[in-house]
Amino acid sequence: MFTKAIVRAPGANFADGLTTSKFGSPDYQLALQQHESYCAALAQCGLELLRLPADENFPDSTFVEDTAVVVNNLEGQPPKVIMTRPGAPSRTGEVASMINALAAFHFETHSIQAPGTLDGGDVCEADGHFFIGISERTNRSGAEQLATLLSSWNYSFSFVEIRQQHESLLHLKSGLAYLGNYRLAVTAPLCAHAALADFELLRVDPLEAYAANCLRINQHILIPTGHPNLQKSLHEFGYQTITLDMSEFQKMDGGLSCLSLRF
Ligand code: CIR
Image (cartoon, rainbow, N blue to C red; front, side):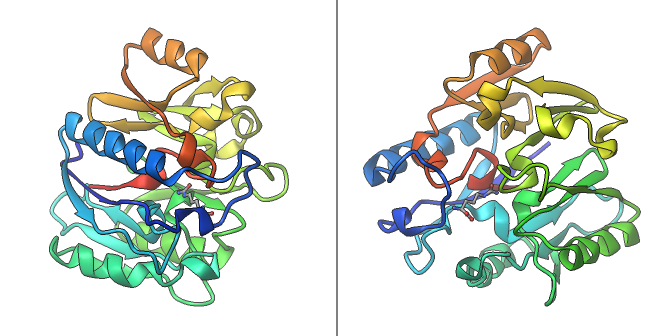
């Protein structure tokens, strides 16, 4: 169960962030509206929100998920956070203000050290097992540092290489989401990966690949609008869905998971 989330509204220079998408420049006012709807959906799922002010020093800073990995299901152990070291140089400075924001929650705090890089979007927890993507943003050193910490707390992990064969994936969670009950939503190229062999895979239609970044929060799954096949499959499995228009965030290579840090 998640009870809290940290979010940060996009700043007026949101369009200056990193992107590879061909969908054009985002509309800032529409992005703000979509961010409000996203926050309302998190509240509907029962989360209490810490809303950070927009930070125009970092145009990608609305994608808060990339700055930290929270590990807080450890029986008898204090909750922990691993501050990342984002792989894009323009984003490394985002971590400092997230450290400040997290101070109120008293996590035991760890940090990824140079030469390691790690983006939170490359980390997917699945009931005690962590999938760690090795991507253009997360290098092997960063992945290994995280894995060492997780192992020391008795978590299992597996690395998922997404660089060569899955060029279109920015982060691991751009192509994979944990739905609970050892079930993953996955894009076609990732389905054959050995690390996923012990999980039930819900294969996402290649035409709906963006929706593989859906987001389970307690009893709901958030899904971007316009992906009817995945939505139908999720309903057949008995999930309740909330659809959200993510068009302006998709233009900046962002998805549903990136916009919040949940714990
Ligand atoms: C970036 O390229 O870093 C941002 N424009 C998008 C980050 C999306 N984050 C995520 O998938 N976790």
